[in-house]
Image (cartoon, rainbow, N blue to C red; front, top):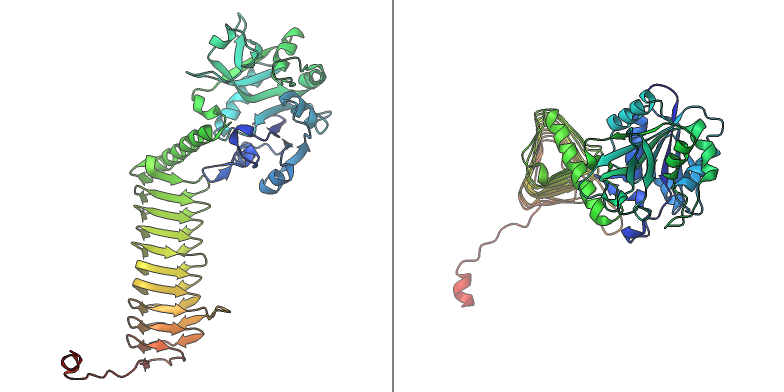
Length: 455
């Protein structure tokens, strides 16, 4: 954005219709808090002077949100006009334009903010409102235009007359203001209205009375300015955001077979030529490389996946999977798991806080916890690392080229050195030297005619 511009985000309200003690702006949409969405698009737009007006749950809000923010407290929530006036002290003497946004409009985009500022600048307006034409305007403030198309007033729903309620152009709660012309009028706002609040929207009629020019920029997609006043609207915002994320990824070369059942958080990155199958949920700051195949029925949270990775019917949290490895079906990778290149993690395998080296296999029905597995080793069916003795957790170390037979218990702390073999059904409590066969089980005894005697 050209020219000097600051922003004020109004985020003081509780959001009583949410029926929650959590401040409304701290509800997440696509894995990111609503207010964080707003701050991030302002930063992306190149606006570093960000003032956020907080009130209810102020400390919680400040602790949860990151960015170059100057916090302003509104101890009494007396309306949007009063909230903006609280930020006025920080903006005293400011000569540029100010973007004012609501903290509960997470679907706003950088492109729309830039278009709003461009319209404001081109029209040489004292104030410009971001508006939209909607099929159901009930509940929103209406944009009242004059004969020349300028905005002469914004009528709040509870104060609008019958003719104004027929208007389908609504107020988004986002404005671009010439601060030098708007600031002196904040003290002129009145609370003589249906809600007994100081409306920021009254600025437009006051500017018109002063002979100033006001206008509106109408966004083409009205869903972008959707507010989130209750949990129904929150769910609609969530769905809209997730479809937007899917569409953006598909335009970047990612195949998503069913966007309606594919949930991807806002901070997720997915490489080109990757295929996402139905019922896939990708959360947090997960990064997935190209040429992967993910799904169906996969949940991945805060993980890092290389290229060519295949994941099916699996749950992964805080794990790293290197190139050309496969996970699942029905595998569970827990935090601290590091899977090397060309590794196979099969069905009903759980791995926690462990590393598995290149080319190794854990094909099925195994638990690997607090362990280090080298390259090209094979962990048989039913193997567990017994890492917890009831008091502390200990580590199991398995070298390169090791073969662990089925139904083996490795009781940590224990080391199985390179090239060693462990016979099926063993319980290993002592270190196994390199290239050694370890057998730790009772000798088999067959008693002939035992069943006949028993009968």
